[in-house]
Amino acid sequence: MKKLQLQRYSAGQRSNHWAVVTCFVLAAVSGFALFHPALFWLTALVGGPQWARILHPYLGIAMFVLFLGMFFMFVGANVWCKEDSAWLSSASKLISEGNAAQMPPIGKYNGGQKLVFWLFALCLIVLLATGLLFWQAWFAPSVPIWLQRIAVVLHALAAFGLILTVIVHAYAAIWVKGTVQAMTRGTVSAGWARHHHPLWYREQIQGRSAKAQPK
Amino acid sequence: MSSLQTQDVVARSATTTPPPQARSHVPEVAKLIDVSKCIGCKACQVACMEWNDLRDEVGTNVGVYTNPMDLTAQSWTLMRFYEVEPEPNHLEWLIRKDGCMHCADPGCLKACPSPGAIVKYANGIVDFISEHCIGCGYCIKGCPFDIPRMNPVDNKVYKCTLCSDRVGVGLEPSCVKACPTGAITFGPKDDMVTYAEQRAADLKERGYKNAGLYNPAGVGGTHVMYVLKHSDQPALTGLPANPSISPWVSLWKGVSKPVGLAVMAGAAFAGWFHYLRKGPLEVSDEDEEAAAAEAGQGTQGEPR
Image (cartoon, rainbow over all chains, first blue to last red; front, side, top):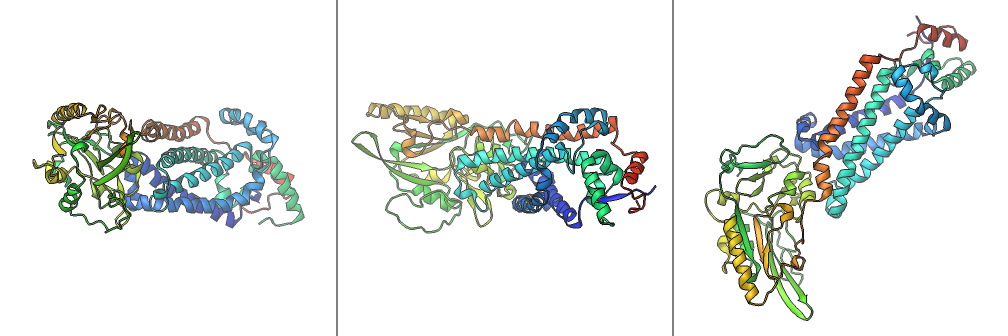
C-alpha cells in the first residue's frame, strides 16, 4: 500500500540532529569510561585513556553548540501548554495499554516530547557550566577546589539525567512505529500524523491543499 | 618504579577486584617530621630534588624564605615558613616541610578513574604510577591536603613518593637521610608514634603545653606525621585541623557510581522488556487510508 507522506524534518534539521547524536555517543562513551572502572575499557573506542580525557570536553562543547541549533529551531514548537499537562497525566495509560486514540489531541509535539526537549536543554546547560569548572587543561587551576568538587558531582548528575532522557527519547522512537523515519527520511505517514499528532496533521493537510507538493 | 613492589599493593585506583598482595605482610612505615627540631635549612628539599632527579624552574625571591612559593610537579616537598602569633604578642617563626601525607585512606586514590594510576602499598606508601596517569586531575579534587600537582608538559600528576624506590630496597627516604638535625625520622609507624609521644612530652616540659602528634584520624591516619609545638592549632602552619575526604568526593566516587549505572541499565532494560511484553505502537492500514482520504489526496503522495 502506498501511504501519503508528510514532511516532518528538513534535511538541515536531520543533519543537525545526527551531528548532536554523534557527539553525544562519543562524549557518553568517554564519560562512562571515566565514571565507572567497569567501563574504563570504553576509552579504547576513542583512542585510549589519554585521548578520552583530551577529547571528552571538546565533544561536549561540540554537542552543546550543535544542540543550540536544534534548540532554536524547535523551541517554538515546544512551548508548554495546558494540553501537555493533560497528555502527560494520561501517558502512563498509553504506556501500559498502548491505545494512542484515547490520548488528548496534540500538535507537533506531545507533553512527553516537550519534557524530553526541556530536559535535554537543562542537562546540557548544567553539563557545560560544570564541565568548564573542572576542565583541567584550561580552567580547573583557577577554580576553587570546593567548587570543583561540587561541579564534578553535578556534572555526573546532569549526565545521568541526560542519558536517562536519551533512553526514553530513543525508546519512544523505536516503540512508536513510523517515528524513526522522521529523522532518517524526513517524512512520516499521514496515518502516523493523524493518529499521534492530530492537530499537527490538520495543520499539515491544510497547508498541503494550499501548496500542492509538500516536499 | 612500580615493578619493585607490585606484589604488595593493598589498594589500586579504579579497581574493583583485589590487587596483587601476596607480599603484604610488611610493617607500615611512617616519616615523622618534628617541627621543633627543624632549622629550615632546606637540605630535605635539595635531597628530594637530587634523588628524584627533578629540576624546578629557578623562581624569584619575593621577600620570604619559602621558595618556590608552592609545591609543583618538579618540587615534591617544600619548606613553608610562617610568622605567627600562637598567643597574643608572642611571635613565633614556624617552619613546616610540606608534601604528601600518604593517607591510610587516600582521597587521590579514591577519586582516580584510571585503573592502577594510584596505588597504596602494604607499607602505607601512596604512589602515582605515571604511565597509567591520564591527566584528568581528579586526584587534585580528592586530596584533602592540596598536594598533587599537574605537570603542564606531559599532563601527568606528580607528588612525593616517600621514596618508594628507596624504601622498597630497605633505605630511608632521601629527605630523612639529608636532614642534619634529626628533625625527620623514618621507621615502622608504631615506633614513630611512640617516639612522637616522647618528643611531645619533652616539648610540654619545655613549656609547649599543646605539643602533640599530627596523625589525623579523618583520613585513617597518615604515613607522614608531624610533631607540632601547637598541635591544637594546626592551621598556624597551613595544616587542616580535621582533614577528611570531602563528602562531595565520597558521593561522587561512592554510592553514585553503582546506583547511577544500575538505574541507567535498568531504564534500558525497562524499554526492552516493555517492547517484548506490550509490542510496538502501530498505525493500522485503515488509519492510513482514513488519513489520506481526509487529506483529500487519495494515496498519491510519496510512495512508501
